Image 1: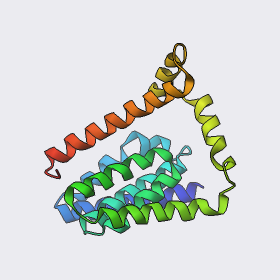
Image 2: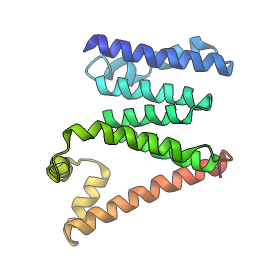
Image 3: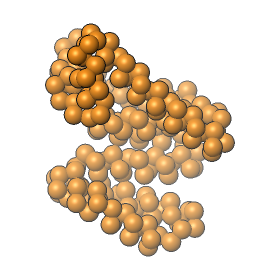
Length: 187
């Protein structure tokens, strides 16, 4: 597993160096900033195997997008989301940005959805497939959203509280994407 982490981290670093050169940035600075990042320096060697894979996918997705390969970029982001659920946020933001850029977002979205479906297909067992995720989310959420949800359960039905937290989270993400896209000229 340590060799896998080293390989994935090296692949991420190779993508960063390549992108730095393409942008005229000193690759040595990129290597230094990446290497001194606490996540890279501490977390990855201590067991962040999945995070190394996500970082590698994100870096190479950015590289592919810069070259106009939106489908390849979306497939890399979908792969990252299959490794860690939080990476799905990057995929959603990317697809929204593609909508703003009018840059083949339908093909990219279909490719990402297709990869996701094909990845889960061998494991589908009806409703039971995702029952464990729902149960784990109810029992293990120590996030800000989970805390708010627990608070709301004291005076609202459980499903309503969860729905409100989900809606608020989606509204925040949508607002950030919209503001970022309008600043960068995507919208």
